[in-house]
Amino acid sequence: MTLFGDPTTWLPFAFALLMGGAILVYVVLDGFDLGVGLLFPFATPDERDRMVASIGPFWDANETWLVLAIGILLVAFPVAHGIILTALYLPVAVMLVGLILRGVAFEFRVKAPTHHRGAWNKAFFAGSLASSLAQGFMLGLYVTGLQMTWANLGFALLTAVFLTVGFSFIGATWLIGKTEGVLQARAILWARRGIWGLAAGVAAISAASPLVSPRIWDKWFGWPEIALLSPLPVLSAVLIVALWRVLHRLPMERDRMAWAPFWLASTLFVLAFGGLAYSFYPYVVPEQMTIYQAAAAPESLIIILVGALVVLPIIIGYSVLAYTVFRGKATELTYY
Image (cartoon, rainbow, N blue to C red):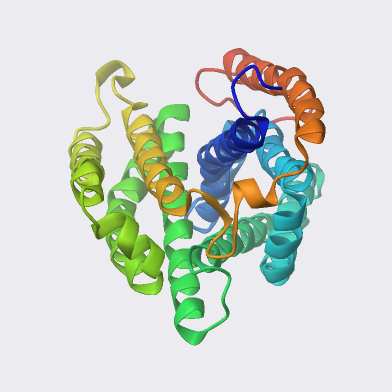
């Protein structure tokens, strides 16, 4: 345990990195398939089948990263797990109901009789919407230190709306790369419209976060932190401009640059997550408990770490396999 120094220091930090990485991968990967569900009301019945086919091989693997993140929180930071999930009990329940509804609708909408398919399509959209709003609401409350005041609840509602907009945008960019023809053209149009909501969300949440959290204000606007963090908003603005320019050049011959919007949007998510991670560190429960105070005993953590180092390559391996085997354009959805 002392190979990398004091185990009470490096083990909690290692698990915080693992948990943060799992959350980031989940937000990007499950973000796009939640976004595809959010776009259902704007598509025709045939287009909805192709949209589901575009995420069919991936959506369950994407949600594995959420299970991994919550599992790490439970076993590595058990006290923080209790505090966080107690404070977020209602939105967590809404998210779980939404994810279950999505999973059931995903399987039944194709197998159900034609006259029932519309109801399952609505259920798929409702599950996607509930999950996205709940995740955004939880993020907003977490940023504000899990304190239930009217200002904090208002900020949580703001993040709920704009995270949902962000998911719908990255979902549209996924469809641009994964589909072709009329549906691809429609996805380009959705992305062109959604980019303004994405830009507004990034600006609004960035402006409001330091106002609702004195800790974030100090970490963002102290010296020399303000100089070190200044590249983040600049890079975010550059990415949004690049997205706008690419989207207005698509579609191109031989499907060139079709995946560029998705990768640019994913990079924007990574930058936003990096800014949040910096704002929270070293707290696992904002304003209340650091990762070092909440961590389990080093003897327990080292055993858990060995297990994580076995499980993590398996999760990465089958995710890479799924995205490799089912690369290319989405084909007709069928169970026969």
